Image 1 (tube, chains in turn purple, orange):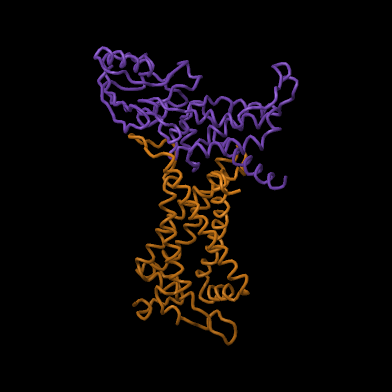
Image 2: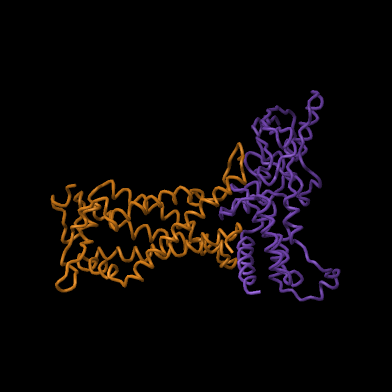
Length: 250
Length: 243
């Protein structure tokens, strides 16, 4: 198949950036979106121009490294799918495809389609962990965890930290990511002990990083490749309010 | 408590709850105009005769809630714009409804509406002749009260006033349908299984409020244009329709 690709090029964080249009012929419907970009980069190298930079790693939908806003949708048109798992059969022959980086002030553009998502790492470092060693698998199995809680914690832990929630949010809010990371630990007995401290620290770091505020649109959950639910945002709101109130009395 | 991003959302939700409750009480009060001149006048008189601290305390409390709600919204919107200085070239919305996306617009118009509405019926500067509309109907023995019934009928004689009221109530309907369900989300006072029920409930509430408020200007306009005859005394004389 043949594609017209409108790709965002930007030389660095300070550069204004611009769209570049390339035509790419002979794209296999069976190739993934990233393989298509590899093909485009080979073409660019043959033409003697700079290849387009984009993030990728595992290419099997579990590492959260690939990004890209494709035709206005974070990770492209297919639901519950990362860019690396998106296939070209989802596009039609001759289609114009617009490829943009994940846009948010908290995700400064490094170059072209590569953005710096270390703000997510800082949020995790602020409280997305358990301070003490909780043992290995056999020790974990010795602690009774209600099935409901373990299911919910597991669903939250499915977050791969890709940043599609921020990219799809009209306000670049990181609530879905933060709520998944906090919710995952807050639901389990090992994490409950530090619940208040965790929630307050993670929200503070989230605010400091310059993310926007949640307006309950649900765009984040709709774009999430792991289908993280808005229920976790409600839980974070509740846990945060409770932590604030408890802090007054301690 | 209210300085963080979540704190500001709590403030939006808490002030929102007050206003959500207020519009229902206000609507229920208004509907007494359908029961007749004596009922609505007596009700309005009873409200205005409340002890000073209660009357002005409630008014002040509502005013503070409106101001806090609007001010917090401005702060949040400014932060949101700063958080995403450059939008996508191709902007797609996957799930968010129109009412949720246009909360700022509906809120701003509603703020103007509130100011106009207060000048219209409470402070009575839009049509100063309302000040002279006194009557003994619905008044305690030997007293005269503001003739709210006549004010309402006179006010909605003006087609542009009625249309503005109905449009504003439609925007309120949209504002409430997202706002009411957001209260539960922002404060986290919902279980996972309640999300759909809350959204449906908020929509139903919003439509009840819209219909309850709009029925009055609709009936007045209908009678003015001779489609229906509901209000008795009708007061659709020339003396009232002028101005």
